[in-house]
Length: 219
Image 1 (spheres, helix red, strand yellow):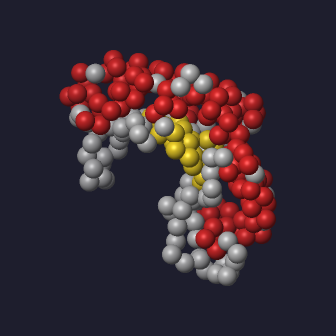
Image 2: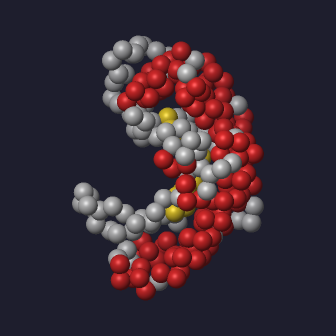
């Protein structure tokens, strides 16, 4: 992955169509490697969750081209590679999955459900309110605590939403607009020969929280 990180570093310095066109072959080679990594990632994840066995890399990998039509940021290319194997359709699935983000100095793994639509968000809050002890148990496991601490807090309301108890023991969870857990990945980890084994260790630690969140889809 060192060559991929090198490409993304250069892209961050030269994020324009002229540079990208001149280095298109480099991009294509990096993308093919990321496709191969994603294919192996899906294969390994499907051993944990057979519902993902039919996913293809194209179902999970985000395009590098940015939609700048309604953005003040007119850079044409994303400066990262991202893939999201998840039950029910990969990157377009509303269910909790296993996101991998590759970006020099900012790589990360994340699991869970990011910014669901309002009805699903309300249902998730209800499930967490009713079964918070199960979430506590998941988060108390040594395997979970090795990589995570709690739900990510970046996307949160200032107050507990209407219809929920503001004095609930985990009121901070009810304020969340996304239910994700994440952990950073160093460039050294991403480039290590055993990176996939490390990634799967993290995914296994995150699986119980995904299982809890995805149970909502069976209700």
